[in-house]
Image (tube, rainbow, N blue to C red; front, top):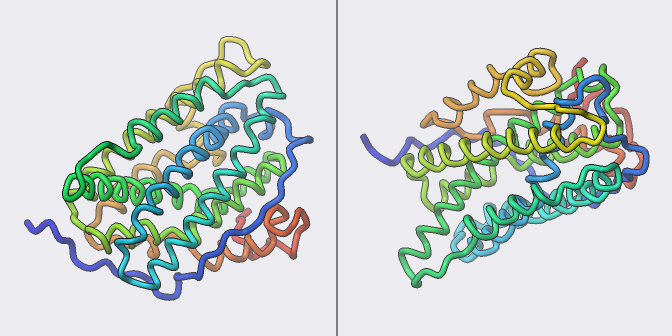
Length: 308
């Protein structure tokens, strides 16, 4: 069987010219338990604040090294826009960490481990110029494509997670999550297109997906457990896959079924990210997001895609 998959079928109408948006969030009034009655779900989502700053800075670092290898001008512009958006995501989630510490939950022990993972294990290596150095660069490009499949999945989920609204989620936190999620949907094709442009080998795509998926599951369950065990308002609290499954059934986390379905979607030889999610929905939310519009809503969010 050939290692080169058939050309995937991008949806042309889903392509957007990307730009980084200046955002404004204030955390003074956001409680530690920002999702009433759903402490586990809230803390599972909080893991984003621990993982994303280091992870997205790593994306930016890798992609700056990749720019000289890009020969398609539109793709180069997409990557530059992606870099700008990811840098802003990292900064916005970074700003939540001091607030968590003020509320009595110091994230430093966990974030130090995440920093080590991205800076040391997945960072630059002392390799001779040529094949070895390019191989390691392409491995990381493929890893980012796999991770971005899941950030887009989560972005699409949070845009449509009406149960968060019904449960009275803190508006500021919800806006941060939906602004970020909308931009993940908006730029969901860039990492995959870059991988296909530079390599596109199916074996590498499948192998790096397995690495990325395993790492994400491990880091997420470890992060959820960290939050539950260190929450100053909880005693002897735990985190488990059973809790995740039940929260998914209640609609306050992605469902287990949807997570499992995402696996063959990415591994399909005809997969393209533009086939999943809606750019129009993402852009509509971004036009109404208070955080993305100087702290003030720019208009009704009804067409932004949050379903009841």
